[in-house]
Every structure is written in C-alpha cells, then in structure tokens.
Length: 401
Image 1: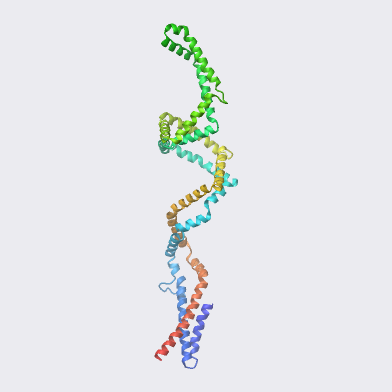
Image 2: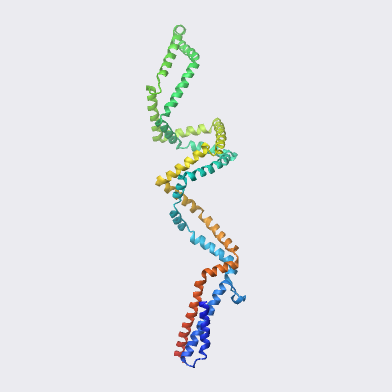
C-alpha cells in the first residue's frame, strides 16, 4: 500500500504541476515527479513479472518463476549440493555432531542396546545363510587358511598360549594328556610288556630274554606308572619343566619371525587338508543350527551376548579417547566417500520436489516471503527516480537554458 500510494502520489504531483503558475519551480517539480512515477511503474512491472503476467497480459519474459520452475529447481538443487553440502562443511558439521559420542551414549544405555541386540539377532540367520552359500563357502575355504595361517598367525597363537598360561589352563590340558596316557598304558599294558620282552630278547639273547625279559618289562612299566602318579595337579618337576618349556616356546614365537612363520605355515597346511575342511564345515553346520535356534529366543544367550557386547562397546567409546577418535574418523571417512553420490541424489531430489510444487502456491509463498523487501525496491525506485529526475532536469536547464 505504501509503495503503490507513493506511485499514485507522484502521478498526482505531476498533474498538479500543470495547475501551478509557470516557472522554474513548477517545471522542476513536474520533471522530478514524472521520473518518480516512471521509476515506480518500472519497478512494479519488473517485480510483478517475476511472479505473474502484469495486468494479466501475456507479455513475453514475464511470469518468470512459474515458467522456469523446473529449471530453477534444478539450479537450486545444484547450488545446495555443490555449495552447501561441501566436504569441508559436512566435516565441520560431523565434528560438531560428535557421532562417536552419540553412538557411545546409545550403546551404553541398556534400554536402547537391548532392542539393538534383538534386531541384530534377527539378522543372524540371513547372515549365516550367506556363509552357507556355495560361492561364499568356496571363498571362505580359500581365504580361511591364508588368513588363519598368515605371518601373524604365530603371534596370535603365542598370545592365546600366554593367556592360557596366565589362567593356568595349560596345566589342565597337560593333566588331561597325562590322564589319557595313563589310560592308554593301562589298556595296552600286555602289548607293551610283550614288546619290551621281545626287545630284551633281541639285545641280550634268547636265554637272557627268557630269564629277565618279563621281569624287566614289569619293572619298566611299574616305573613309568609310578612317575606318572607322582605328577600331581598342584606341582611337580615335570609340570614345572612343562611351564618353563611353554614360556620359552612362546617367547621364541613372539620374538623370532621365522618361528612365527613356521607356525603359520603349519596351520595353513592343516586347515587346507580335506579332512579338516570336512570336519570344520560339519562343526559349522552344528554351530549354525544352535545359533539360529538361540537367536530366535528373546531371552537366549545370543541376544544377551550381543547386548553385553554393545554395552561394552559403548563403555569403551566413553572411556577410550583413541577408540572414540577412530570411530569419528571412520564415520567421517564413510560420509566423505558417499558424499559425491549423495550430492547428485540431493540435487535430483530438490529438483523433483520443486517441480512437483503447485505453481500458484509457490508464487504466493515466495511473494509472502519476499514481499516486504520487494516493496522496498518499489519505494526506492520511486524515490530515486524522483531525485534523479529533478537533478537531471536542473542540470540540463542550467546547461542549455
């Protein structure tokens, strides 16, 4: 109303000057008011032409926004994608968001970690089924021996053995082996006695073997059994020697690359054997069935294990600054890697959304949003036209009379 009223005021002043006495003042005011009226009309036409046809007349190059809506949408999409969602801006935004901290808080909360664990458990059968796929099985069969039997396999074995020693579990294994040896000796005692007698007969002759073979065999077996009985679980010279031997071997594996490589090569040969492969996939089939059955139970061990693992991960991200920073860098790297494709899709998305907008609604909303500033353009055009018209008239009059 102000802008339009100002234009009408310029028109009224122009007409009023014709009723004024002829003179320099009246001509100067007429020239200024006329220029202000023309400037206001020109700016009204330009602003109106952005949104619609002025006075409803189909004048060329008017109603620009409705006519160029699709092109403007594409241009807006490209601008946002290329100049707003830049790699630097996205990196700064991710830094302020602290994605690692958000993940840590989410996982550390049992109320959110438990549903996440249940969701992961539901995907477990599909994941296991992909491993059972024929192509995946062939790939796993080729990769597992290389991975588990690689140069670092020896050091992994050394760490596992050291962990067993720290918990004293290696002595349990040693005790089990000794118990099995005792059972073997007890079950094969007659065959061993006969073998010892034959050995004595070969070395000492038939007469010595007949006279002393049985006695030597009984004595040898008795000594062996007595020594095995002396090996108590709480300590013995043989157990101490086994401890010392284990520590030496672990140190060699950890410090000697050649020994570690030998362990890796041995594991690779074992894992590549057909019998071991058949045994491994048989064990895997049994484990898979058990895991699938357990994962289907909300209170099963799989869900509990996943919930505990997620909670531990959240606690780790809270307490370990290095792990927190690594996750943040990984998240930023993933986003940066997907950014080019995301920029193209974002540009297309914005273009499609703008193109679907109703033209009349779009024009009305833009006019309401930009209206105050555009009306000031009209007001400024009218006032600037008034001043410039007066200055130009005064300058021409002073120059040419």
